[in-house]
Image (cartoon, rainbow, N blue to C red):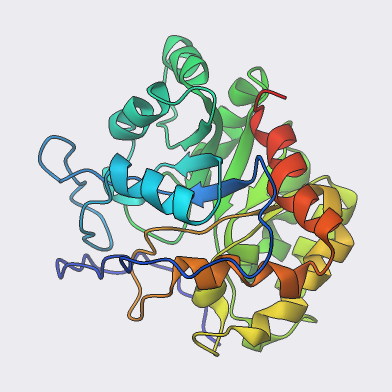
Length: 297
């Protein structure tokens, strides 16, 4: 399968919006559960979209995000700066500021961001910086070596939106970083490539040996089996077995830049397949996010 090397051209067609309803939970969602990966998106006017974006989304405002969290049984959430807003983190920071005890954030910043700006983001609840090599509008790996030591002083992590088929070549560089590495969407490579693919094996090695983390999210982005996603189950189970204390779950709401819209509740209901015991689900939904994102105990 050919690995893309260039940012896709901008698509001004409006993305699908999330479904209005959320399927009921098929398991008891523990108190303090956290959705560690979702986005709020402004209207494109007060909070403009960047010109080099890869897609154009409908707004995903704070009130709809909070309603989704409640419908999923989540009492905590982590907002990840969406690529269409580039390094303009204002909307995400505004939302974080209104929910200091229950929300955290992952920002996108330019290499020349000031220490004062980073400190203000930390006070607002930001605990990581995202590096994006898949969609236009993000900040790529060129900024990594400059930013990593600066965010290390704040106790933050580096989050990667990347296809881990690229990971073997990057392993030596990432292994030297002074911050934890967190990988979106279980590595964002098609599960059809198989678990023996060098990219997935590199991710497994990293979570076992280097203290890396993975987000059990985005099943619909890597599966060939919409909408039950059973082909992702062995993938998720392998990651959980490799590093049960460094796995977190995320909805990836509002599910941007896709052609078929999943039910967010159905995605949450994959967890009992991936983590059959209540104790493991509590670790993934409560204990691990509390540690990674510095939530109050």
